[in-house]
Image (cartoon, rainbow, N blue to C red; front, side, top):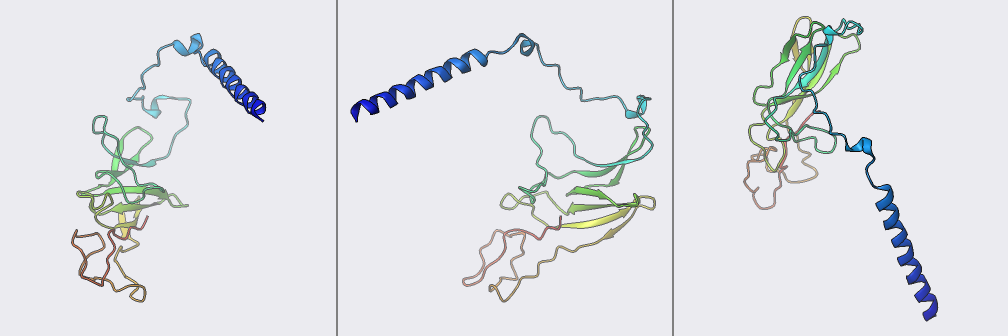
Length: 197
């Protein structure tokens, strides 16, 4: 029994040593990996300058200003209620010129989707992101549609809070965006707003 244990411990250390030698040998960078990495060009030439690209349509995108090297937070599936303010809905024309379709205001635009006929853009707009509550959006987000040729905007949802009174005794005086105050004894409130994304 003792002999078997000794052999398995010895086998374990032998395997570990061979693995370390393999990592040391194969983990060495090749001469090609020693070359310095070229910096990323943050001012690419306009797409209209490349005659090999047949580009005759507008592109819709969301633009947010850089703030040095501070990371930007984007609303996404894992953390949908966190977003930095100031993201505008933009239109990029084939000649390289840009146009603001929907300004962010105090909030941010996110999730643009172009309609099948290419005439409208659906998007979600956070109303006000000037202050975060519990690390989440302090106000609701709603879905809008902009008809690009006319610039007419239609609001499709209203992020009002409609609690199911059969589930809990809600404190209706405490808004769902969270005022920071505790609800009265025996009542509850939601610490986040309703966000339609």
